[in-house]
View 1 (tube, one colour):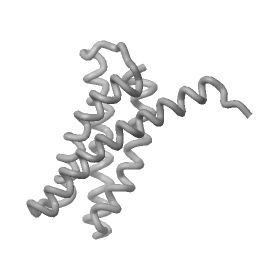
View 2 (cartoon, rainbow, N blue to C red):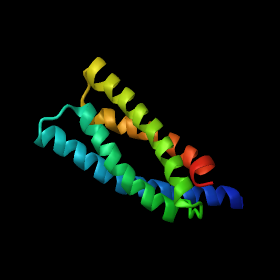
View 3 (tube, rainbow, N blue to C red):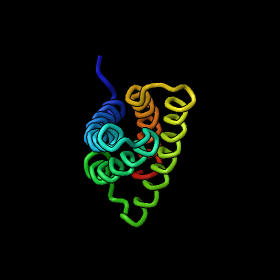
View 4 (spheres, helix red, strand yellow):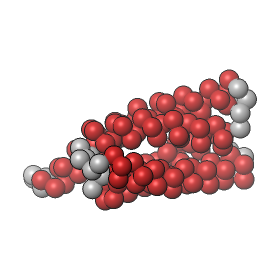
Length: 131
């Protein structure tokens, strides 16, 4: 059974997005853990700081490697920022719910949150930011 060309392209693109996400996650989780464990910060603001730092890595790498976009930076940047802002809000709500309302551990909460935001970001960037 052969995979259709569009499906193959989507799988390749998602794989690149996932790889970029791993690089961004190293930055995000590294800062999150350093702030919580090293500086005694609460997990919610610590994860939001990590989200912003990882977002910078994500923009640069996704533009070049995942979407191979030729959309001008002046257009792609504000679109990326808007999608990232929605992801920021989702991160805040989910992490607050998991760690404050449910009093759960912050790292498993972040893993679930990362999965939700990753799916949102992939679809939004594919169909709007870098289209």
